[in-house]
Image (cartoon, rainbow, N blue to C red):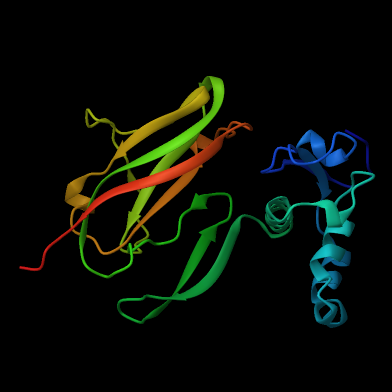
Length: 230
């Protein structure tokens, strides 16, 4: 890593560099970015750049310190990762927003942890109550140990994160690594998820450990049954 007179961080790209030609610096699967300063804040607030639709490209040009990277070559998923990392480095991982509860229509302030991955609140196409029994995740990575990913679930748009269980009823605190595509079944506590309108899944780092850099998810399947009206 090159030496600079300002702090930098190397971040992993979601693409892992695979779509880029070997001649591209992006092919190594990482990119080095610097922390935001007043210069980058001026870029983000520039009405001229916003009107021209180039504000984010100018931001990327400013924060990426690797040589030889053409901003136009970066895939949208990798741009999103760079943008998210830039925001976290500049302002921290907590992002405060005001949301409206879809059931009560009341507004409330919510703090989103940008370092975590959470699915949208899923109602599976209707507001009828469901019994969510388990979730299947197909994944691979960290063949030598644990993935260091802690799966949790949220019901009915609440703030409480509930632990998944294995088939024996023990709480799952980490996902075991595997070099090949593997499937894990995560069971809910049906006393919690047995009569809900919506459901969300959250994946975060386990006990503050670094998530395996080669961790990948292929698909997520939610097993549920819609409850009949009595």
